[in-house]
Length: 120
Image (cartoon, rainbow, N blue to C red; front, side, top):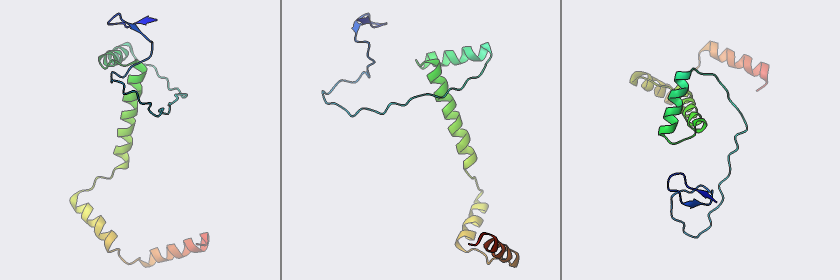
C-alpha cells in the first residue's frame, strides 16, 4: 500500500479523477500508444524554462512538450491551409464561381490536348 504524497493517506496506487463514482461501469476508453520518438537538443536555459512551465501546469515535461509542439504544429498547418482574401478578392472569387467566364481559345486547346493524351 502506498501513501498519498500530500495527505499521507493510504492509496490504491491508481490515479483518480477527483469525480465521485456513480457505481455504473463506463465503456473503456481506447488507449493511445506512443511508439514513435522525436529527439532534439536544447540549451540549459530553454530546458529550465520548459521544466518550469511543465511544473506550473503540474504535468510531466514530456507531456507538456508534446502538447505544446502539437498545438504549434496545428496552428502552423492551419495558417498555411487557410486562404485570407480582401473583400475585393473575395467578391471577385465568388463572382467567377457563380458566373465563370467562357474558356479562351488557348484554354480550349489545352483541354483538347489533355483529353487526347489522357483519354478522358
